Length: 454
Image (tube, rainbow, N blue to C red):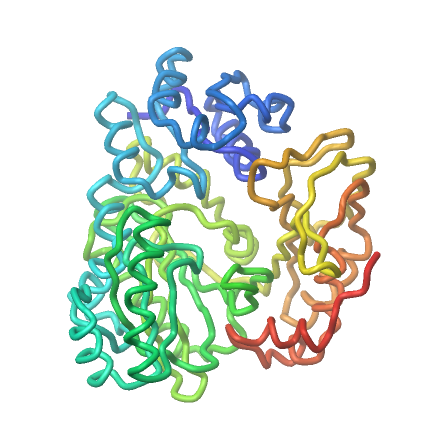
């Protein structure tokens, strides 16, 4: 059943991205928005717009009843959740289907299964995908945690099963720390996610964060190669690349085939990302979790494959089978994405909204800027600080870095502090140019290399 009208239940740059993809397919769009986003770029671009509530997300973008009513009132027959908010909420996906609408994403039961990290780990093991040594399922008590840790070996990572975005994680170096941190982690997980369930994994020091993009139609699945996301601050990605320059051909083949094996084993439908830790020392990869949605960093994959991932999501949700086989997906060059946030990197990344006084984006075939900004736009204070993503493509990694440095010099966003100065410094940094990075690299580097104020 082809989609006739699509409601976007999100905001910011991803809402703009979905509007463009849908309109490119000839599908009319409805932008659901909070009162604070009434003058957003997505609202201006969409064919229709509907107010779903007050600025605070709990009363608008997280309000399932309001979103379903907006779809009914505008005769939309499908809902795209973007990323964040309700995008990985199985209850929302089920409510959309129960209302007779199309959810642009996986089936509710798939979201539920893979959204629970312990269940996702079990699914990976069933599909014979390597996993980080860890607990057998959830940890029910401190004694069980100690038994698991003695088997796994310290240091261990205590993780909230319902966590995400780097939240709900504690690292214990020894048994005395473990005893204290288990109860802390359980209490924090319960408060943050409404679910205090925990599991445990061995800590792999100086690992890389490598993720694989997959597309599935519920029967078949393909990968669109991998992304390197090791440059992180407080477990939030800052700079992403595709492909990973750390992998050789056999390692790339192994990690991508692992991702496809898991996607096929669960009958995955839509776009999804499987996240792995990669151990440079051993060359081994370990599955850690799956994101059952489009990722912020999806543009770098689009740049190296030529595949419009958001459009493919919409096609698949509308009932179309995958339009290509694995052999049709080819890798071309190297792409880098810098997340541009409304934060001051010279002042401990203090976030701050403001009015966009001037916006100038470099124009070149190899440069893309996914954003919600326009001159005169008032950035609201209620939401994530992401303003946009600067993406460049080159025939190889060094050329891509050079092009990113040039593009950053040409990108101007006046009216508020942004992380552009951070990325200008990163593009010059010798360890990044030599690819000597890992998930624990960026924070010590920032302490040693404070970003100058602009």
